[in-house]
Length: 375
Ligand SMILES: *Cc1c(COP(=O)(O)O)cnc(C)c1O
Image (tube, rainbow, N blue to C red; front, top):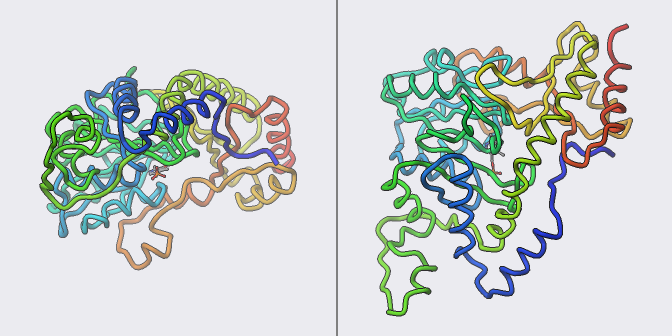
């Protein structure tokens, strides 16, 4: 089978993890601090707060904004379900907005259409690595007096307006799950420019302690910690951060490789009627975390039949991005019409794209898609 995704992990990662183990300090410590600094620098943010996943990063972003029961948070339904779930973790109400057909992302118009007096925040996703229009949405959110949280789970290495996708974000949440470009096994981070919020986020991930366990350990004097608020254990380990530091060095190469392979897919698919591959938006560049293709009716074969035939011929593709409002967990939730979301989730699929994908693999995959096209 040609897998849809494989993380690029080498001997360097194995050695870095082994060094962390041999050092005797395996919980959150100096390697996490270094990974936070280097990752924040990479995405153009002043602070990075490493956590256990992007899901917990999103949760803490909403906690630090004091989002509470009775508040509404606008989210795309077209996203991995964690985006909407994070809103429920703080007892607030996720309100689904539709997305743009070309990018799969929220726009000023789709958010404005579902905004109410209770809207306290928006979580906008850089879906599959395609940046949303950061300039437009950040400006609109400011004008509405609503906080903007950026779900950048897939966006490491993507750019908008010539800068990394996270640069200038009030709060951006990242994932280091193996399905994303760089991985720590599980892991996440919040990046931001606000120093006070960064202090609170560090506390929130570590039981509300006013001094981290690592700092307490490093101190020559006994340090008596205080627990300032009810918080969480969302820490990343130093073993994970050691892997993350090596992975971060691979990021530019991974993005360049994916963009070259995506361009080759686009070229090969260009003459097949009814297949619309994802592309860069006018204002930025995707990292092609997910190479998704929209199937128009003129293609003549349904998405599910395409997936079945690809599987039969040794290709592990995936359905397109899910829609939370169609899942049992969100059954019965009232929402505005979401026609574009439903179209994309029904009619799109994700093709294999990773460092080990060969030109022969690509030719085979496109050959299957060509065979299924209406003659
Ligand atoms: C993967 C993903 C998440 C969840 O990330 P984890 O690190 O697995 O918690 C959240 N949002 C989006 C858009 C994702 O793609």
